[in-house]
Structure formats: C-alpha cells, structure tokens
Length: 461
Image (tube, rainbow, N blue to C red; front, side):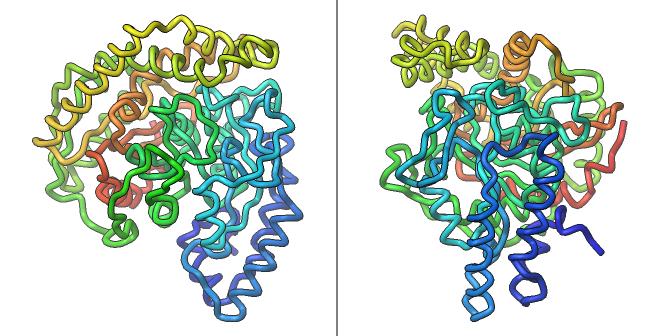
C-alpha cells in the first residue's frame, strides 16, 4: 500500500472526493507521524492535534453529504508560524512573540480554510523570517530529513522539512530574500515565490515590507498550482495587493517544453560549488532534450542586487523592530540582532539609491524577457551545509553567499519557481529556479511540471 504521508494533494483529492479516503484517517495518520518524527526534526512549533481532528471531522461530514469544495478539501496543511491564526499562538519563530495569540487570521489562511484545508499546525522557521539556515535557538533547530546533521534552509525550513519528511501534504512559506526557494532547494521540494502583490500579505509578520512575498510549498508542481489558485487574488487590506485577473493555474499543466526560449544570465554561472555546477550543466542538457531553446544572456544590472538587498532588507526590518531593538535586544538571537541593527545605520541616500537600483533591475528584467520566455539559474550556488557549532557566523555566511542568487527576484518582484535538479555526491538535494516576467506564474508552473516529469530527484552525481 502506498504511504499516505508522501502522496500529493493531486493524488489524494480524487480519493477524498470519491469517499474512498477518510480525511479523518488521513489526518490521524499524519499526526501520528508528527508525534513519531518531529521530536527529532522539529518542523512544528505548535502542532494542533485537537483542532486538526475537529476540522477533519467537519470536512468529512461535508463531503459525505455531497458538499465537496474542490481540490484542497480535506487536504492537511502546515502553516508557517509568521501567518496570523486567530486564537492560535503565532510566534514568527521569535522569543519576542512566544506568547502572542492573534485576534485575526491572515487573509491567505482564511482563503485556504474556506477551501476546506485541515490545519495540522504552525511550522517552525528561522527567527523572524530573517535567516537562511533554519537555526532557531528559541524553538529548536529544524533538521533536514535527508540527513539530520544538515540544515533544511531558511527561513521556511519547517515547511520544507515537513514536506520532505511526509509530515504535511502542502505548506505555506514566505520569501523576502529567498526564504521559500532556498529551503525548497535544500529539501528537494517545490517552492513558488509569486509576483509581488499577487498573494496577500495581510496578517503576515513583516520582515522587509517592500520585498516580502507569501507563497505555496509542496511536493509537486500541480499542488503548487492548486494552492496558488486559492492564495492569489486582490485583498483591500493589503496596500501592495495587485488587482489583476487570476488565470486557472491548473489548466494546461501538461504543456510541453518544446520551443520555449530559456535564457541563463551569466551572473548565475559564477561562484558555483562543483556539484551545483555539474548538476546545472546536466539540467541544461536535459532541458534541451525536452525541446527547450537555451542560451546565455547578459544582465549586468544583476551585479547590483547584493548592494540593494543588503540595504533594503535590514533597513526595512530595523524600522519595524526599532523600538524592540532598543528595549528588548536580549530577546533576539545574536545573528538576527546583528543583522537588524546593521539596518539602523542605513541612511536616506543609501536607501533611495538601493530603490533606484531596483527600478533599473526591473527594466533590465523586462528587456531580457523580450528575447527569451523564461530565465534559469541555480536556486543557490552552494550545496547544503552541515550544521556547525558557530551557527551565528554560519547564518551570516549563508546569507552572504545565497542572497545574490535569490534576492533579484524579490527586488524585481518577478515570480520564481524552485525545483529539484538532482542529488549531490552526499545524496542531498540541489535546486534550480525558473524566473519569469511579472504574472507569468502559469508559464512557470507549466515548465516546472514538464521538468518534474523527468523525476529530478532520481538524478545523482
């Protein structure tokens, strides 16, 4: 019998709809698995056994009475712990908010609950969504299910690890400078950072408001498409929300890759670890065999992304946290306190220059995408590191190396989909990212689905 833990929502939904699979039994199965494995993996901060079972019973009753809502009805979800959930502790992975119980629920969580999901719990994360390793001194460090001595990535490390370990079917994440895509790459799952403003951030703890994105994470592209269908859409409560038509993301997922023009910015070919470079070269050969037309392109403006990201992220984060940094500095871990305090040194000319750089990068992206359909690069230049004792330096070093690869999509607001591209010599996942024009999620998902069919996690160095 196939293990329910690793079936995708796309596989589970027909069984639930046909009443061949009980949402209650599915939920019990995953909760038992959380009880068994999470004491080691630490993917959840707040598991919700009682409320999850209550939701599952309600869902099952509706379905038994013919009130089936759609492809997420009865599907277990993990919610990253920086999404507000009314009446349920929401910590953002921080000691500052260890006892915070919101009086409202994030818009995206409301949408998902209306779709009939079952909320298994609040997922662990790098403190305040501001780190790349998944280290958390307050709620225990999440471990990579592929090897528990290695990091799962951050900040959505609880989401990526729970998916990889079969402790949830789908999860939510957030991405300010790579926090969906980086852990997706390290844990061998799929993660989508949508176009800026496509998914509401209302009720999500801010990190850097002009760069924050909310999005789905899953074990399949079709699950991303189904979830984005419910997450996307205008929200009057979010001043950055886009008022645009929402296409059907699940339609035409089986579109072939033949004739798609893919551009690889030479920027993404520099400073790669040997295994990342080898797997990326293999991916290029495979994409060509699938019919894609691939060529290298030059986008000189990408070299400015490190400066812009390093000014904007800590600058905006320190603005939100300014009072707490003065009065409760001991409640921040050393790495996050150092990162945020550096933002208090940002001056107006630096910040304005960084924002001007963003506009130049957006124009450069649009110009590049006049000649190609999609851009491609490794998600991050490194293979997954093992945890070290000096985790403070490790986190800052991971940000230094990985931010240049992930933050361009945040700075430009362009959608980016991280997919697995194989396993390194140690048997740990490595990822690459498809980057599209604004609102090109449908095309990204089609490409990702075509790539998924080659079973990339079967590719080994």
